[in-house]
Length: 163
Image 1 (cartoon, one colour):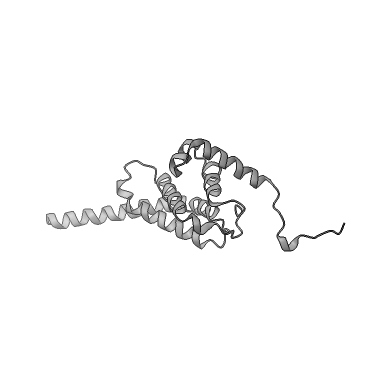
Image 2 (image 1 turned 180 degrees about the vertical axis):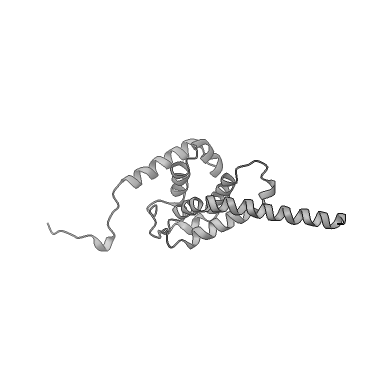
């Protein structure tokens, strides 16, 4: 076998190994990441096209950088990419779509998901989204308080009582 064929065989083996490693990562992490994306976009779990688009883009970026991770946690890298993409497109996610966190604004959802669902520390959350730690703490507290309050019935369902 020539040197050229050997190099070609090695490159092919490297691509196959890379694809298998990435497939294994996606098989283990995609469900949790999709749920996080669904919470961020305030969509319902069964109908979440925006969350799927966010996750697909984040996973594509992780795959593109797969060989350069060098010991970095691929889940953390993908979550950071997901958060960045959500933050850049947060203006699209103001309208409630029926998800469990639909009562919250995009920033509140982002902080609540990172802090409570993903378990990211306040300092890391603050660094990730570019806010002071105190602001992250305040927004998280406000979001938790909002979620603890009973939801208001929709305006058309309210019954007016006569005095």
